[in-house]
Image 1 (cartoon, rainbow, N blue to C red):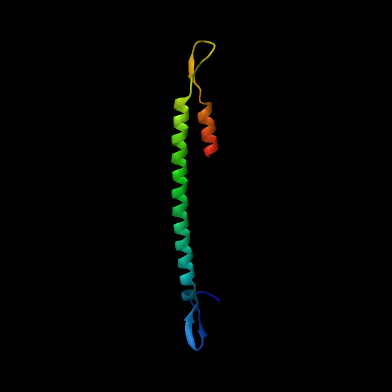
Image 2 (cartoon, rainbow, N blue to C red; image 1 turned 90 degrees about the vertical axis):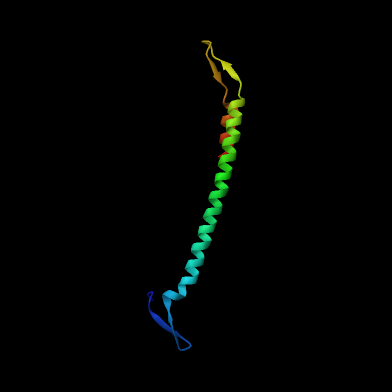
Length: 85
């Protein structure tokens, strides 16, 4: 049946499109709320992991290369970022 068609239930005309409205609206609202919650949790995890990664990178020791150049050891920061996703 197409939306907009009318059927009779117990002698009362009933619009098919109107029958689907509460279910569609409820599904939309549940999806919107779930999306908001998922985004919030994802951003919390990302900020937490970025903070830990920055701390580990700053904490790294200075290494001296063969030519006398000093570089920062970022191994711990890399592993923290990798584990955080």
